[in-house]
Length: 344
Image (cartoon, rainbow, N blue to C red; front, top):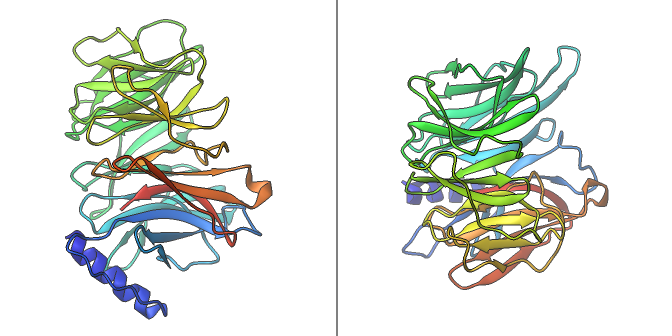
């Protein structure tokens, strides 16, 4: 399926006046990233681009200069990707909605359930999109079936669920349960919306859960340090990073070997093994992450992120770390400002 997707994308490149020769046995790896001209940097002029990693070829896959498109997310069916489409209809108060692009099919956008439908992620089976949107009494967590258009809210007794992440088998979510004065890491059974507290119940600020690929552990932030809790030991947290680092944006590699995170004190990127061993820095360009996102390729070989001195600079760097070769590649296209990348 991925090979077919690469072939269709090749046709799109040819139509755009570019030619790519895919002389490979294995299908090429692509990074999806929102980007806009570096002279603008507002978000409302961004398009979604695909970068073919080895040859460095770019193609604009949305081509809508009067609409802002950010937050791409790719399904594992090698066909579909979604993104948040921004508009400037401030009179209605509608700022963003979720859209679906499929190779060979017309784009579909879905009526927003709140002012800002954003941050959609695909279920492991590629059938459902999960996103958050502001509600009247807190954030709503919404499941959207883009093929049928069916949408339903995940109703729990909590005030708000944030940063929800799919379990590897697609039956549960790990999320931040946010209430005035505290936060918890919880798991939510999608079928019955049953909620279980995973992190310790104290005054620690817990954020950003990420699942281990075996579905048996969840990593998350605990007052700026990286913690890991096993599902069979709820309430117990193993802290695996030192006090000298202030962690953000944790991302567990698909092969389970490494957890990546950024240090907000220096904005370097680190990797560490789940037991806390093997901590090492992999970046050499200290700049703040864009959208606090580190993205692993599906085979666990590559890690991508975008970093910048800030939108006012109009400049940033797209970094791609090869964990197999232990090398770092940086793409600095002065004509474009890159937002957070994902793998396709």
